Image (cartoon, rainbow, N blue to C red; front, side):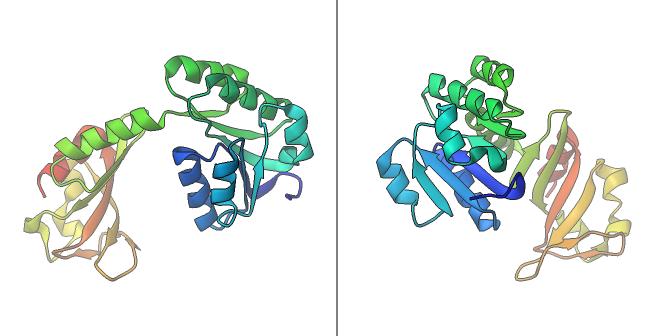
Length: 222
């Protein structure tokens, strides 16, 4: 299993749609992933896709201890509609001293309970995805969008046609739009970090950051 608190090793509890996507994403990033679910069908489905997959009752502290979960530095509780199992699993992980616990919440009340039970990070995937899609719908030609709690956002968008063939310094996007270009992705080329000397061309995709409303306004000009 894992050495004591190995940074790259992660346990994902609950292998439904959300948990499975998280586990698969972590595995693709090169992490050792232990998947746990009480459903034998899901365990069988993920058996060949993750490092280890176990059918077990994750609400039991002793069961998790036998599986060596206390040795992991990170845990993700992705249990779906069973709120009691979700809370008890977070409690068990907390009792085992897992230092970094992420938990999926179905609503604000559920999230508050998870935090009080021991979750260090609570995520609301359905609400967050809804907000993200809303920004994409109204954000002009925004291709992707992430908003942080303090009104700061990162967006992925095409370049304004008027700026094609110019350097970022010549475009003065920060002065004109209040956004900062973080990087540029050109078709069939690797992502490159932006510098004032970077020349942007028609077809380029820009990664821009700034206040949410300014990122949205900039995307609307493309």
